[in-house]
Length: 436
Ligand SMILES: [Zn+2]
Image 1 (cartoon, rainbow, N blue to C red):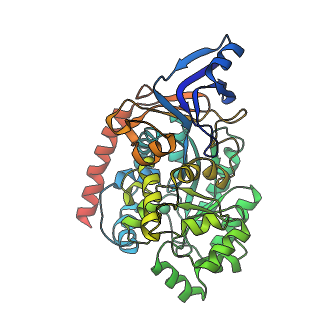
Image 2 (cartoon, helix red, strand yellow):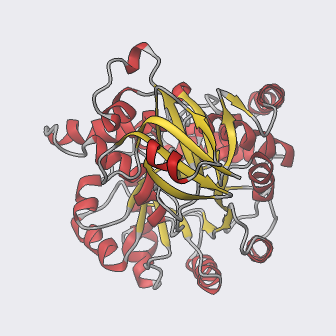
Image 3 (tube, rainbow, N blue to C red):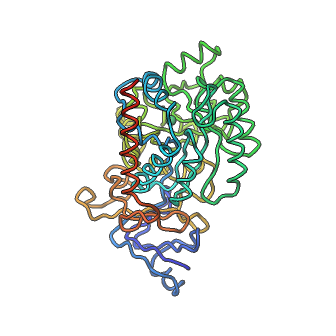
């Protein structure tokens, strides 16, 4: 069945001028045509017409780094440095983590992300098969991997089992239309060189993304330098792990030499500005990375260090901090941030057919209604989406040609039940932290 989606303005891609009174022809999972509505209507007279009226229709956002299930820890421990936060709060509570917590936490995150126009997210966590189950059921798209550590994990036990689980998932989901399995060693300070090499060879064998936290804080850089005699990027370089499969989260503490190294090796970056600010980690050199030609997209990081998954907020923060830091308002304009949130993110993830609305691309898209005081008046769609829009403004989301959010309602699962379950889980989490 063919559908023509009609909207006041259609953004096909960040580099293209917006299309006014346009239409997107969707057939099955894909987009068949994009153009003026009147032309599409004449060309495809049998197609069902869905009119979004006074709205902007745009490619779904790609959240390039998160730990979705950490919604259950949202607001549990704030206003402290990364290592204190991890070692005193997150890691101890995660020792008691349960499968159902991960599942319901992920579903809550998916509800929040869909309401912000995110259609694809990259996830690294424990009990990742539960996040995968949530993705399968909710109809969203994701790249997912079990977080790997040297120490025993509550998710899989000893490391060998984590690698075996990753391999099993890579085999099981090969060719899945909405799920891509990736290999996720947590960080260079929680994974030995042997662990990193074993993980990298798995990523190579299955030709998938190798995703790791890197150069997030000054403390991490000092620790890796003391342990291995090199800063984190050069530590990975010496292990032969810098290549086009590597997607690093954060990349805050980079020197010029490392930016050049990333560009030369084709390393990709997930920029997580709000998490970096909240944990006092610093600000990534986004403009320099973009100028060097590094593929750098946007991520929210986990909702426990953000504390929301509002992708509009993430875009706005990304743009504003670069301007403030450089005393230059021309840095990181709205269109560029939008590109990071869509097509650059897709390229960084090596996932074809995402991040643009074009013939042959996946029908992953979102709609923002212009019927709100803070979205009035309307001159430029990039400016509106990056500087004025908020999560609640998204009315409709389609993933792989199917609506998952329609007229403000999630169609694929019970959002209210999900909230209730997480409220119950939070009581158990609270009891654990009070005991500790
Ligand atoms: Zn993270």
